[in-house]
Image 1 (cartoon, rainbow, N blue to C red):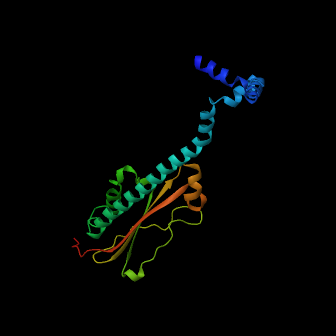
Image 2 (cartoon, rainbow, N blue to C red; image 1 turned 90 degrees about the horizontal axis):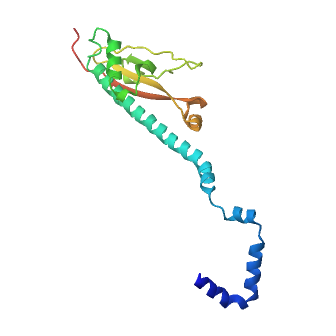
Image 3 (cartoon, one colour; image 1 turned 90 degrees about the vertical axis):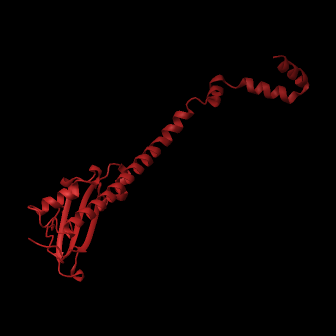
Length: 198
């Protein structure tokens, strides 16, 4: 307080300083409070940034889950294909059920057998392998079959999982055909081992 009084006593003789102080005191109280207020600034900044931050966060989580599920699907298809290659599936009482069990028992619970399309085809040579479409023009599953073949035959295994996207703008960017789902595909092509048939 003493220091303030000393400073004002020193500068009392300067007319420009007095005019500035007079102008400052003439400013209305409401306008002055509004100009100096910083209390709602955080709320406004949060309201502007939060939607973008939430979209980015949920988008990163969903893309991470999408790639993790695709990797799990690839691993499970490789494991199930190995069972076909060695003849374990063909020698089971119900080959398709044995393949589904091998496919769906892993994958950290991300691959549900209810949501997959399994297509197993047999060819005599690798040059004859073709990849028909999974879906018809209406988007319904079609053309899938289960023919694991016999010893030393060429087999194509394809598994498709329809992954539902839940992040709004991400579904428009990643969705197949502009829809809100993405087809995850895993495939393997190999020649069956010369296993013994019973």
